[in-house]
Image (cartoon, rainbow, N blue to C red; front, side):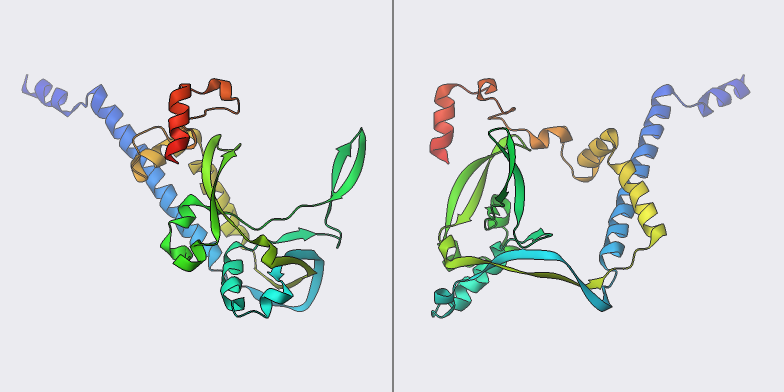
Length: 244
């Protein structure tokens, strides 16, 4: 009788076994997530090696100060702003053309290039380095993001006429050696942590967010591209934009 009681006490319940399995899965996810960060840092810290013979790979187009602005007293000030919002575009030719269909025919038109806008989270981030005087030259704007399906706040430079586009050859002067074994391991780890269920565990257990991870990219205002699906009433919709 005592042996039977000892045997039953050693057996684990169904609930206990499920809890152990769940904890083992979470430990595996944490281990893979930590390893992914380590591999990313290793790949990032690989030093660039200069080429013996640099070569040209197309052209690059970017913004520079206009000549009259460069000769002004505020040249250094606007140069500092340009470093934060400058955009670069690459092309195989100096024309920077793209295909466009017009009246059933395919034609080539010049690619449009604008200064980078600043997102709301970058705007409030002190590490970005915007000083109070620089903030006066930006305008707040609301725009709809079709990828995240929500309205987002961004800040655009109010005087883009101070900059002009310039084209230069895109020269390749350095290269970063590739470690095949490192890239293989990093690809395997990324494939694991990007699974749907694994991403949910990372979002809840590591990032400490109790709501489903997929709702991070949703909005309470608009959940699709069609405004007919808006869940708010017309009055609430108007009050929302008045508070912005």
